[in-house]
Length: 115
Length: 113
Image (cartoon, rainbow over all chains, first blue to last red; front, top):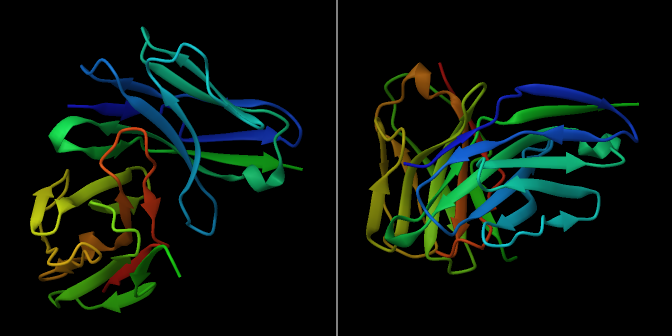
């Protein structure tokens, strides 16, 4: 079974600084995707970034990038130039493939950006 | 409007009552999911559905019932609500492809008193 672990329940960062959120996972599959979702105080779940395991290049979306280490099964999210609007809960998510498709989430990291 | 909608947004019910949370999506996504979100537990999968009339248990199915007679609807029923079922419930939908994102409803905050 797939597992997703986020070891940092809470983090804080000063506005304009960089912060990295950690995620590790376990799977026996060879090709897969990994996702980071953001949940602001509005409760709406928003996709931040996705990474395909076969791609060696780390995914980047504006100020958000990942550090994907396939051998270590690590998938961290880096937020550069943090903004107040980045304050949210962040979830790492891992979809299982095949006929038993479902999405497994980590427990989340609450990020607070301070002015 | 296209999207995924949940109703109600907030619900207070008494222990032992039956409660149904509604979920409707307009994309014709094959997969739909119900999660509950609790502090310290993240999102835990309750039930999911691969298509109409096909449902399967997730991580925490006890005390819940689902049905999916139509592709667009996936209601979640608490047959006899308990205080431990006080939570925020999220419905989501997705295509059954690993590279596609799941789309979430706004959530239902359920309080069982």
